[in-house]
Length: 303
Image (tube, rainbow, N blue to C red; front, top):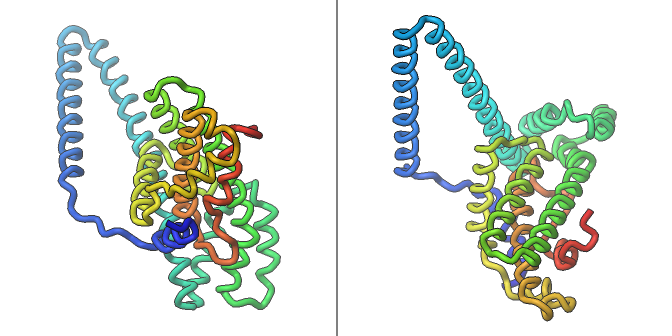
């Protein structure tokens, strides 16, 4: 298949929202979680009652530690919920921006502008870009053009950083796969590197996902790639990656490293499209072809 067509299909699929049917697996997981929570609570209550029966100070000590544990658990849950909400906010903002641009609704475009500014208002690394955009607010300009201006002046730098994160992660995965002797270690390292890459990309665009948010993002990326038909590696891309130098000819391990690196790059590019608060318009979306040369170096220049 044509890599250019794959990219076009992936971009079109970014705006597709899959309908989620009722999931028995989710019901099972929720039920088991509630049962486990009830079991832990009952065990804690029985333990505290036994300690009170032995000595009052033992019971109150157990109550204090139980309260501290509960507070810590609630804090962790709250952090994960906020992380999931931030991640969902990025997707909602991108969808709102696409609808506003397609419809030409001035009020909707104004809401998108306000949401993007509030999303990055506290980002010190984007202070110069935000100040530049604030200076342009006095200019007479259509809301659609203001959105494009934000994309050009604000998101371009984030896109460049995200592309560097993807290329660096892909090179690390390729090099690691090439030198590790065991396939099991390959899976663990590749999984860790991909999750770390997803967290970095989401955090760069303002998502800051926690543990649950990272796995949710990973599931979204897999769904996105499946819809776009990008999970299957094209023979042309593989040959282009491992056939440029002697690496692919000298060792099959280097060939496997190149392929894994390219798959990591595909995952990273999909995450970039999902986490970007605005759809690509003025800026050109990075493609796998832009990264193949760096990935096929298998760590060359990885700093």
